[in-house]
Length: 393
Image 1: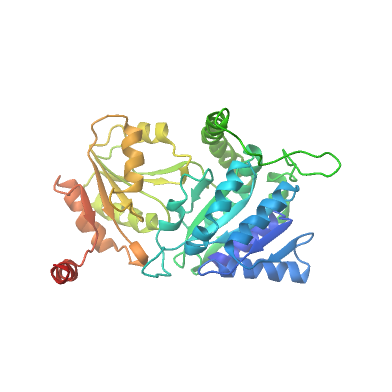
Image 2: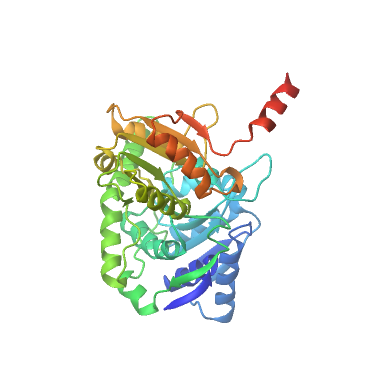
């Protein structure tokens, strides 16, 4: 059903159709509207049977989700920014226990200095936690990915983060095709836990593992992540059959067939990037884009195949590893496996700064002319930076 709806509300409505049995949350912008809407559904009886648990912190939210999932319930929560950092210990535990929790991360910068606007610093800080990470291009995909996330999580017995850009998507009102309950039920079977805490049949979960077996535990966790590279596109294919539209998957290629320069990006910036590429194509530029949906696991082999003919790769980074460089750029260089493809990092949109077509045109014109620097901070205010450097000296 087509509706003009806020992104957060679309995610809440779609998540409710997945029949979660426990929703636990602590409010933090910009994810609050999602859990507020779910709490209304639980209170009104529109979402039942479901228990909405008000907790005292984000750490408690993930801890409740862990307990609920371990007891055999389909569990969901949402967070952002400092909230994700606060629950970090429990985030790692959820993955280590192999619990199929789904969590929305409304991507927001992390401090200090405090900043409530969008970039990918929060989710990227948890990239090695063992969770799958799926990034939405727009609110339609954000809603669709939640339906797929429960299916993926429960097939693999692994937790999944669905990452949607804070404010840019969560608070944007746009047209979204919301599924029906019948469609979701046809796609997502009832939750059948692979492991469950049951007093009638006692088991131990999360026991201490010593040096004699810890390497094997981590190796098996890595294999489950690698298996997700097959499951994610399979689930996306089944989703297309039931819902009649392509959504999710590992990557989204855009006009890369004959491209000399390919721009790689994640999240909502892809919309602006596609428009910029269309305008450059009208001038005869051979340029395309590759949107990454699955950042964890990272589809290295597929990325290498799709970018193999590119003369130059530009990575739009919405987060940055201080003292090192671009996070997605590092993944691409590993994926290339020594193949000499020039790879440039363009850091853009940190802390919610708008990424405009005008600025992209300048950067991509340099890339097409082979004059782009290896590392560029888009729209950097050099006067302000030099003034601060001089003050520090």
